[in-house]
Image (cartoon, rainbow, N blue to C red; front, top):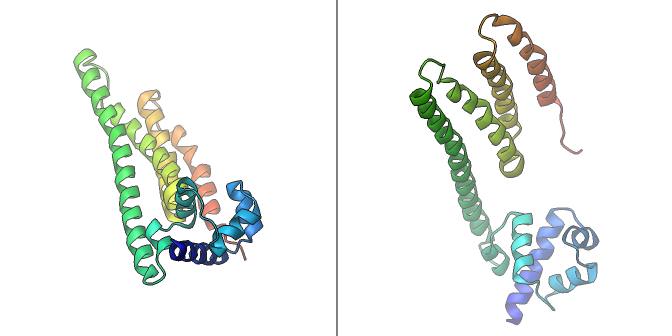
Length: 196
């Protein structure tokens, strides 16, 4: 048990230093004292299992990574692959729910209101899917390109949805609204937010 405490402590210290955090800064993030962080890192105590799980998520490593001294690169690589696969699967599942609801609305509308444009349900599914993907990207992927492309599709598909739903007679003025939105997205994408 003593050996695993030391191993976890060394790994926690290494991960904290790689993130460029002091013990005090890490303690603030997890609502612990810097003395508790110091005890974890020198192996005299271990954090509880919930805190270990939160630390693994914070450092984006598996529990196996924390408990091993050697071949840690393999654990990170494998855990990152599994994590990415799971995040992609969850994203696809959530987006498929939007399309399933759109299909239900389409079928219901087709059966009860056959003379209305029922296909608009699928047009509305596009901006809803993009909005969900923007949210998922913010929390899971943090990819600037995904944000730019999904935001662009969201803007234009929202305009198209409003057009299909409400403005069927004069189409072109509503699409002019998208031009400044797209210019703003391009400029936002070009801003370098990396810390120097």
